[in-house]
Image 1 (cartoon, rainbow, N blue to C red):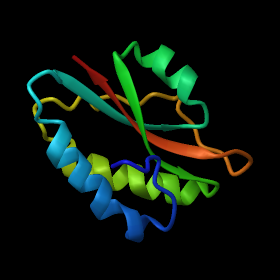
Image 2: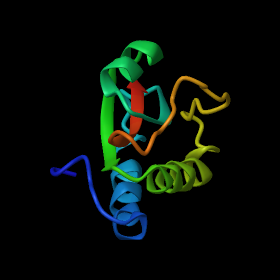
Image 3: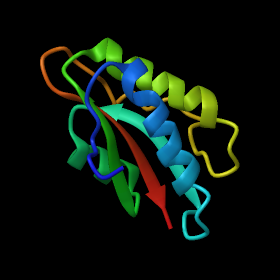
Image 4: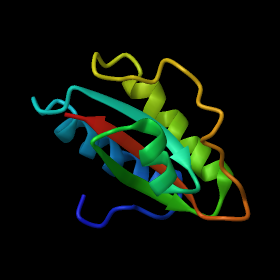
Length: 107
């Protein structure tokens, strides 16, 4: 995905995001990943303590961010590298700011 973060309706971008996941997360150097949403990518990276964070989706609509995050978690939560087994109360979305869906990765 050269033009990340993607913007638009969830139904218009989700297949592209799924494709990125299928092509990226099975790379040997990635040992774990976490899918999340936030208003502040820099803070999310610090909170996660990850090696790298990819901003996949950007929107000013909180419901759209929730829809994209939920779709990703639904598909990838059973992946052996997925670390989404807990709820992080700090990753909130708000209609007042841009909302991001991201994947944090550990190498």
